[in-house]
Amino acid sequence: MSKRSVTEVQTVSSSDSRDPKKPFGSHPKRNDADDEMGEFEDGWEDEYESDGEVVDEEAEDGMDVDEEVLPPIEETEEQPPAADVFIPGLHKLGEDEVLEADESSYIMRHEMGVDWPCLSFDVLRDNLGDERQRYPATAYIVAGSQAPAGQSNQISVFKMSSLHKTQRNAEESDSDDEDDDEVVDEDPVVETRSVPHIGGVNRIRAQPLSPSTPLPPVSQPYYVASWAETGKVHIWDVRPLIEALDTPGYSLPKQRVSTPAFTITSHGRAEGFAMDWASSGGANPSALRILTGDVHSKIYLTTTTTSGFNMLTQPFVSHTSSVEDLQWSPTEATVFASCSADQSIQIWDVRSKGRKSVAGIDQAHPSDVNVISWNRSTAYLLLSGGDEGGINVWDLRNVKKRGTTGTEPTPVAALNFHRAPITSIEWHPTDESSFAASGADDTVTLWDLALEADTEQEGVTMNGDVPVPPQLLFQHAGQKEIKEVHWHPQIPGTVISTGYDGFNVFKTISI
Image (cartoon, rainbow, N blue to C red; front, side, top):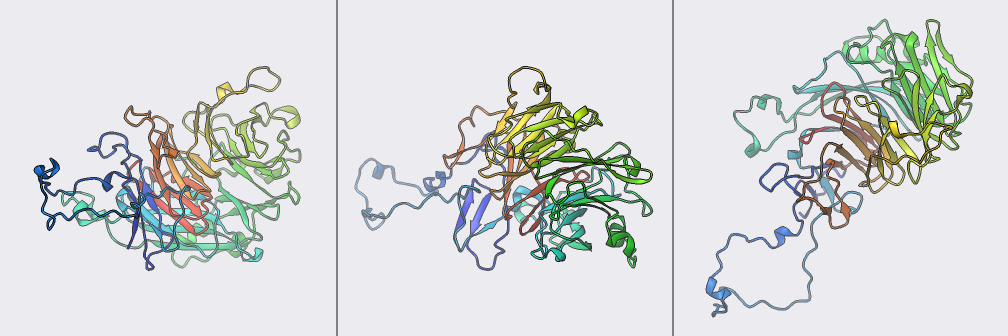
């Protein structure tokens, strides 16, 4: 069996019996070699380290050497073996190689396969409590499939339970650890309830519920919106699906779950991906608002009243290409942001006349701006991810208003580590300086902007090619075509990601 490693925590091994989709973890180290968060190890260092044998000092001084003990070194044309280092996005696996996780990098790590790829999902809030730290954990998510045949697609609610801590090796276990009973080598349990969906699901988003707002009772709806490839946005009540997962023998009300509660047809036949909910009243349906953006650069607002949903017919128009993502302001009820394939980020106020943006960054990235995320704790910070693989952090206080003069703002931080388009980005729900991102280089990265470069770490690169930003905490890989990543708002530090081959649920020692 051959192995290749990434720094000291990532390995790749040749084994036909292993799952070729198994991920691995990597957490850059930041202090000295004895510290758990030390600096990157040299991938070549082990090639030249002493193996502990005692070498005769006289031999080193040129004295005679017994050739039977130390035979003369023969010249050879063979080259020394290459460094056994694997860098996601830079290197490719061989035909007989698979990624193998270093479980010591994770507090928890689980995988879940699906029948058809679910390239968009959202985390559903539950009534199990906030700030949950004990294991095994339970999580609920909603996802939409992308099956080859449009009529085979579904909206599914998954309940993932028995999510135990990652099994530790015997030598790593502490007999005095109070949490030893939580470390169990036991498979998680996955249950699901689904409803049919016409067409593949481009994006799915759940009605937002704050920590102070409990899960709606069975009698009240819990809405989820799906952007279909047919050009329609369907709104579903998934509360009965959750109840069916939690209540043995529960009979699903077919009429309530088999058809959408409402369908937004404002976009005609134009397909779209951008979507975001806003709510000033929690589970109160009369306070809900949802924005949807399409590939023809138009953004529509749909609101709810006591009588139901209301589509506004006049679109917001300032973009000149496909609208890729939308985000409501966390503090201003009438303000939202959008990003587009026209390389810009626009800021809007729904009260403005003419449905034009009120401020913006015209050249936010040198290519399509794929995703944005608005900081919930520091409302003037906005993240953006581009098609070139770059991540920018923007201070919205520097963004110029329309009709005013001034220079184009520059990002307060520009992170260029991913080697392919950024596919998802999201601020940590409670830590104002941390965020997660995913890329088409098949990796998820975790970041902390509060970190600064250590003097001993300056100039550190991976394989002498890819600079390692000091803000990079962790790199997770092993999934194929990762499309979205979300933090679980009720289980601190837990990340869920989806790709072509299913879901990963993990929590690292870095967060």
